[in-house]
Length: 492
Ligand code: SF4
Image (cartoon, rainbow, N blue to C red; front, side):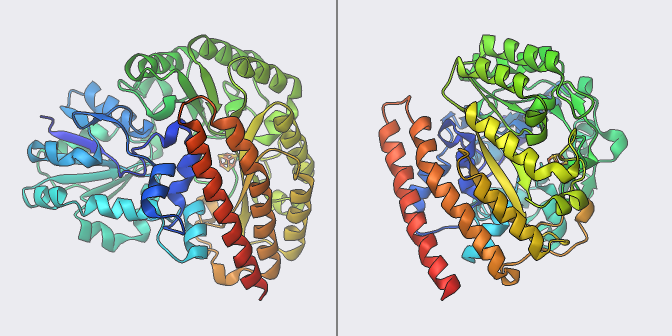
């Protein structure tokens, strides 16, 4: 039995029916769909063998790999079966993405629907498990980390009450061994450990995963060069992994999970291997060529509209390679605003190599190319930025009109103070103006229009695909009706 256990709550320990986009459902609060059905549709339980999950969140796999490399006795377990392992454990590591629902998507939905999102509910549920409370009485140390670690600074009481010994914020590879060793020795741990910039690992210091990640996700690099003011990623240096490292991790996923699908994870996949804002053609093509020799399908975690618009021929080439294996692929993109003025203030480098003044044009070009080449993006808009004016909102609404024929989902998110804007105020539902409401409605109508098309091209390959598709279509139908009711109330 392992001395160190790693886990996450059930909203993270799911393969989302092999579709990462569905994971966004975890940001919603309990709603008009019965909980059992919603849970099944958006975050079904992960399959396990003897309590060991078939695949696990990539971040948790990195922690596991680092601890194994340093000689620790560690196991990643499903939260459902923690009771089987926890008796012998001395330390429990928990991976978090959005533990209190303070992230942009979940806080927006929570604010509108006035309920706690599923992901926050399940995080609390995990820490309240009887087996964890019991193990705490016998000295279990709890260490929490992951992209959502920043949220604990807003909930210091929760940290004390729930028995968390240490929260780690930042890239932890180089400091994990010291922390876990101290925990095993029963020593006092720092309540909140911010990883110092000098401890951020270089690529050769980041271990390969040794067990499979959810949906074949593999990192291709870390950091971003664009420096948007509202973003946390800007604090990290830009690093790209060599192709060989990426392929080794894909091999682990294919060999151990039999999943031949690959999700390339980077803040801007189009900039793979580049040290500036122009895509590096050779490296990007080589990456895709090599990955496609192994993979059945590819998706991208994120890409920038500017890099797509800057290299339309390269993008077409990539699309041709990817579409030789599948009908479409997805990526998250940041639109944020349709106002060139606002873009200049809060994300001056987002449009590069184009000028910030050209941002709305860059968005239209990039989205048009994505539509033509079957990349279906999930785009975000930020509502309530500190410097936002009515004129900016009108420009964003104009942009939404221009994007109506682009196959995409576009989600408006309330401003969350992060990055260089972390001392600003949160945006709340009470601050919604008539224009904000109109923008929210426009986005909802856009998404309802394209959701059906996306479902049709997504759920095709399994015997149960028609039933699953029926479930999502039913959900979308009810959501549409509810939204229209809300619209009436907004204006009533
Ligand atoms: S482009 Fe995206 S990841 Fe990069 S700084 Fe801007 S918001 Fe962050």
